[in-house]
Structure formats: C-alpha cells, structure tokens
Length: 205
Image (cartoon, rainbow, N blue to C red):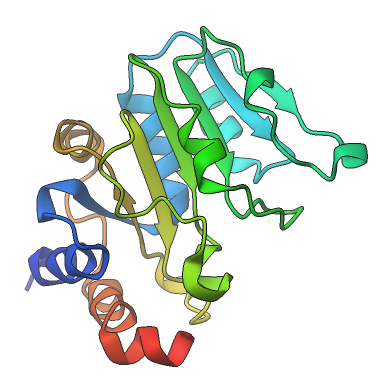
C-alpha cells in the first residue's frame, strides 16, 4: 500500500501536545529547509551563523538573497537579538546550534518573533539536551514560529529520512502543498511512531 502518514502525524502531535494540523512529516529536516525556501514568500531572509549549511543553501537555490548574522567565538557564539535586522522577514537559527553546540535561551529566540516574520528554529539536536530545556517545540504563543525536528540523530536513522515541522496550520498547509506525493516512506513512518512513543522518550532520556 502507499504510505499513510496519519498515525505517525498523530503520534508526533501527541508527543508535543499539539493538534495534527500543526504537524508536517518530512523526509528529514533537510526536506523542510527546501520546502520553506520554495513555499514561503519572503524578501529578506537571514540565517544566523555558525549554522548547519543546508538552510542557506536551500534559500539560495530557491533564488533568495540571504543575509547573515555572524556570531563571534569571542562572545561564546551567543546570540544578541539586536544583531538580527529588524526588517528580516525570515530568520533561521539552530538550537542547539550545529556545529557550536550552543544552546540559546528559549526566551531570547522567542524575542525574535515579529508580525510578518517567520522564525525558523532548527531543533534537530534538541533531543540530545537533557529535559529539552530551552525547546520551543509545542509552543503556540510565538507568532510566526516554525520548529524543525529530526528523528534520526538519537536513534541513528539517518538513512530512513524522517523529521517534521511544527507550525501554525496555515504554514503547514502551504508547505504540504509544496511537497511531492508520499514524501515519507512507510518504514520511516513506522520509525516516527516508534521514536515518539512514551517508551522511546523514556529510553532516550
């Protein structure tokens, strides 16, 4: 049978205490970067660096001119929200950031939210943080927030390609329209259900 993602989507939603309309399953977090770059109508995207290179590469491939906020080693790669241009309508930041491993405070990242701005927080490695402190996944009070998660890190499943997006229903619907049909395979969907189950979360913790 063709892949049916409804059960896995519901499992991810339950894991974060969200309605299913706020969840989009993707072929790894990398697919989500491509979907965001192609589906969102933005004019001034900014990526906070050092950062995983895929978000900027996806934006450039989609024809965007990408601005950069460069964090300094002398500051411990800590983020000063004032360094992000006020007119940026898309901001991408990792938390914890790959490759620096810096964990930004959730309130600092939330302070980047603005009307008309999409705030993308890449939490692909958040499940490596004890208690997932500073996570924004599951938050619905931050306007324009898009959280990306990967299920391949802790469980060593990089070859299965499974991740997900957490965002408002309108953003999720727009990204879903940009996806190819059946983007996540049946084995990856089964892995998603398993990896967000209470037993798996307990084992990971």
